[in-house]
Amino acid sequence: MTGIDLTLDYRTAFDQAPIGLVMSRQRQIVDCNRQVLAMFGAQREQLVGRSFEVLYPTADEFERTGARIVASLDAQGWYADDRVMKRVDGPARGELFWCHVSGRALNPAQPHAAGIWAFEDLSSKRRLKVDFTAREREIAALLIDGLTSKLIGKRLGISPRTVDVYRARLMRKVGAATTPELVNKLLAG
Image (cartoon, rainbow, N blue to C red; front, side):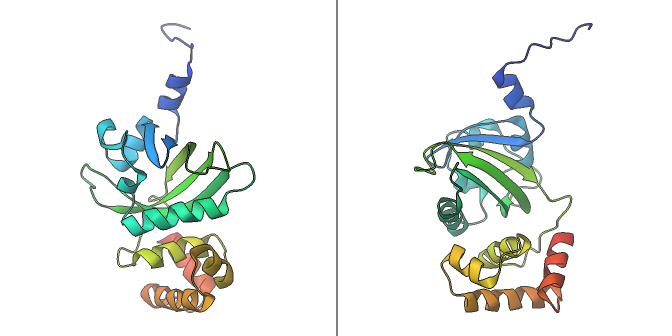
Protein backbone atom coordinates (compact mmCIF):
# COMPACT_ATOMS: atom_id res chain seq x y z
CA MET A 1 0.00 0.00 0.00
CA THR A 2 1.30 3.36 -0.95
CA GLY A 3 1.94 5.98 1.72
CA ILE A 4 -0.22 4.34 4.42
CA ASP A 5 1.40 3.16 7.63
CA LEU A 6 -0.74 0.35 9.02
CA THR A 7 1.20 0.17 12.25
CA LEU A 8 -1.31 0.80 15.01
CA ASP A 9 -0.65 1.38 18.62
CA TYR A 10 -3.14 1.68 21.46
CA ARG A 11 -2.96 5.50 21.46
CA THR A 12 -3.82 5.68 17.75
CA ALA A 13 -6.67 3.20 18.20
CA PHE A 14 -8.00 5.19 21.18
CA ASP A 15 -7.81 8.53 19.36
CA GLN A 16 -9.26 7.24 16.09
CA ALA A 17 -12.06 5.11 17.58
CA PRO A 18 -15.43 5.73 15.90
CA ILE A 19 -17.07 6.34 19.29
CA GLY A 20 -16.24 8.66 22.18
CA LEU A 21 -13.96 7.04 24.78
CA VAL A 22 -12.98 8.22 28.26
CA MET A 23 -10.67 6.72 30.82
CA SER A 24 -11.49 7.75 34.39
CA ARG A 25 -10.29 7.61 37.98
CA GLN A 26 -12.53 8.61 40.89
CA ARG A 27 -15.02 10.14 38.39
CA GLN A 28 -12.30 12.37 36.96
CA ILE A 29 -11.48 12.33 33.25
CA VAL A 30 -7.93 11.00 32.90
CA ASP A 31 -7.99 10.85 29.10
CA CYS A 32 -10.49 11.18 26.28
CA ASN A 33 -10.42 10.81 22.54
CA ARG A 34 -11.24 13.17 19.67
CA GLN A 35 -14.82 11.90 19.37
CA VAL A 36 -15.57 12.96 22.96
CA LEU A 37 -14.04 16.38 22.37
CA ALA A 38 -16.14 16.86 19.23
CA MET A 39 -19.32 15.54 20.87
CA PHE A 40 -19.06 17.89 23.83
CA GLY A 41 -17.60 20.81 21.83
CA ALA A 42 -14.61 20.92 24.15
CA GLN A 43 -10.88 21.36 24.00
CA ARG A 44 -8.73 18.72 25.66
CA GLU A 45 -7.78 20.99 28.60
CA GLN A 46 -11.48 21.61 29.32
CA LEU A 47 -12.03 17.92 30.09
CA VAL A 48 -8.82 16.10 31.03
CA GLY A 49 -8.22 16.33 34.77
CA ARG A 50 -11.77 17.52 35.42
CA SER A 51 -14.71 15.81 37.05
CA PHE A 52 -17.38 14.20 34.87
CA GLU A 53 -19.70 16.73 36.52
CA VAL A 54 -18.79 19.23 33.78
CA LEU A 55 -20.69 17.00 31.29
CA TYR A 56 -23.97 16.92 33.26
CA PRO A 57 -26.86 19.40 33.20
CA THR A 58 -26.83 19.67 37.01
CA ALA A 59 -24.68 18.62 39.95
CA ASP A 60 -27.63 16.57 41.28
CA GLU A 61 -27.81 14.55 38.05
CA PHE A 62 -24.07 13.90 38.29
CA GLU A 63 -24.43 12.66 41.88
CA ARG A 64 -27.53 10.53 41.23
CA THR A 65 -25.99 8.95 38.14
CA GLY A 66 -22.90 8.03 40.16
CA ALA A 67 -25.05 6.36 42.79
CA ARG A 68 -27.08 4.58 40.09
CA ILE A 69 -23.90 3.22 38.49
CA VAL A 70 -22.69 1.80 41.80
CA ALA A 71 -26.07 0.16 42.43
CA SER A 72 -26.42 -1.26 38.91
CA LEU A 73 -23.01 -2.66 37.96
CA ASP A 74 -23.05 -6.30 36.97
CA ALA A 75 -20.57 -8.80 38.45
CA GLN A 76 -17.91 -7.91 35.84
CA GLY A 77 -18.32 -4.18 36.40
CA TRP A 78 -20.30 -3.41 33.21
CA TYR A 79 -22.89 -0.63 33.06
CA ALA A 80 -24.89 1.08 30.31
CA ASP A 81 -27.71 3.60 30.06
CA ASP A 82 -29.11 6.50 28.08
CA ARG A 83 -28.88 9.84 29.84
CA VAL A 84 -28.99 13.54 29.19
CA MET A 85 -25.61 15.24 28.94
CA LYS A 86 -24.51 18.84 28.34
CA ARG A 87 -22.25 20.30 25.66
CA VAL A 88 -19.29 22.05 27.27
CA ASP A 89 -18.33 24.67 24.69
CA GLY A 90 -18.47 25.69 21.06
CA PRO A 91 -21.53 26.88 19.13
CA ALA A 92 -23.82 24.47 21.02
CA ARG A 93 -22.43 25.36 24.48
CA GLY A 94 -24.89 24.40 27.23
CA GLU A 95 -27.11 22.38 24.87
CA LEU A 96 -28.61 19.28 26.47
CA PHE A 97 -28.66 16.07 24.46
CA TRP A 98 -29.39 12.36 24.83
CA CYS A 99 -26.27 10.23 25.11
CA HIS A 100 -25.78 6.48 25.38
CA VAL A 101 -23.04 5.69 27.89
CA SER A 102 -21.59 2.23 28.36
CA GLY A 103 -18.46 0.89 29.89
CA ARG A 104 -17.04 -0.76 32.90
CA ALA A 105 -15.45 -0.18 36.22
CA LEU A 106 -12.10 -1.96 36.15
CA ASN A 107 -12.68 -3.15 39.72
CA PRO A 108 -16.40 -3.83 40.43
CA ALA A 109 -15.69 -3.67 44.17
CA GLN A 110 -14.61 -0.03 43.73
CA PRO A 111 -16.89 1.21 40.92
CA HIS A 112 -15.47 4.74 40.61
CA ALA A 113 -11.78 3.90 41.20
CA ALA A 114 -11.00 3.43 37.47
CA GLY A 115 -13.05 2.84 34.36
CA ILE A 116 -13.31 3.01 30.61
CA TRP A 117 -16.48 4.56 29.16
CA ALA A 118 -17.93 4.89 25.66
CA PHE A 119 -20.17 7.82 24.72
CA GLU A 120 -22.55 7.90 21.76
CA ASP A 121 -24.42 11.09 20.86
CA LEU A 122 -28.08 10.16 20.25
CA SER A 123 -29.26 13.66 19.31
CA SER A 124 -29.69 12.79 15.63
CA LYS A 125 -32.11 10.01 16.64
CA ARG A 126 -33.70 11.49 19.74
CA ARG A 127 -34.54 15.11 20.47
CA LEU A 128 -34.70 16.42 24.00
CA LYS A 129 -37.63 18.28 25.43
CA VAL A 130 -35.79 21.13 27.12
CA ASP A 131 -38.64 21.82 29.54
CA PHE A 132 -38.06 18.56 31.43
CA THR A 133 -36.74 18.82 34.97
CA ALA A 134 -33.63 16.88 35.99
CA ARG A 135 -35.75 14.19 37.68
CA GLU A 136 -38.08 13.97 34.66
CA ARG A 137 -35.03 13.39 32.43
CA GLU A 138 -33.86 10.56 34.69
CA ILE A 139 -37.27 8.93 34.75
CA ALA A 140 -37.69 9.36 30.98
CA ALA A 141 -34.36 7.57 30.42
CA LEU A 142 -35.40 4.67 32.66
CA LEU A 143 -38.82 4.41 31.01
CA ILE A 144 -37.07 4.18 27.64
CA ASP A 145 -35.02 1.33 29.10
CA GLY A 146 -38.32 -0.46 29.83
CA LEU A 147 -38.26 -0.27 33.62
CA THR A 148 -41.46 -0.37 35.67
CA SER A 149 -42.39 2.25 38.27
CA LYS A 150 -41.31 -0.15 41.00
CA LEU A 151 -37.88 -0.73 39.43
CA ILE A 152 -37.39 2.97 38.67
CA GLY A 153 -38.31 3.84 42.23
CA LYS A 154 -35.87 1.28 43.57
CA ARG A 155 -33.08 2.51 41.31
CA LEU A 156 -33.66 6.19 42.16
CA GLY A 157 -34.50 5.69 45.83
CA ILE A 158 -38.03 7.08 45.53
CA SER A 159 -41.47 5.49 45.84
CA PRO A 160 -43.21 3.91 42.83
CA ARG A 161 -46.06 6.37 43.42
CA THR A 162 -43.64 9.29 43.02
CA VAL A 163 -42.44 7.73 39.77
CA ASP A 164 -46.08 7.57 38.62
CA VAL A 165 -46.50 11.28 39.38
CA TYR A 166 -43.44 12.12 37.27
CA ARG A 167 -44.61 9.82 34.48
CA ALA A 168 -47.98 11.62 34.44
CA ARG A 169 -46.16 14.97 34.14
CA LEU A 170 -44.09 13.62 31.26
CA MET A 171 -47.21 12.31 29.54
CA ARG A 172 -48.87 15.74 29.81
CA LYS A 173 -45.78 17.51 28.51
CA VAL A 174 -45.47 15.34 25.40
CA GLY A 175 -49.21 14.73 24.87
CA ALA A 176 -49.17 10.98 25.43
CA ALA A 177 -52.17 8.98 26.66
CA THR A 178 -50.32 5.78 27.59
CA THR A 179 -46.86 4.78 28.76
CA PRO A 180 -46.02 3.04 25.46
CA GLU A 181 -47.06 6.21 23.61
CA LEU A 182 -44.89 8.26 25.99
CA VAL A 183 -41.89 6.03 25.33
CA ASN A 184 -42.47 6.24 21.56
CA LYS A 185 -42.68 10.04 21.72
CA LEU A 186 -39.55 10.22 23.86
CA LEU A 187 -37.68 8.04 21.39
CA ALA A 188 -38.95 9.99 18.38
CA GLY A 189 -38.34 13.39 19.95
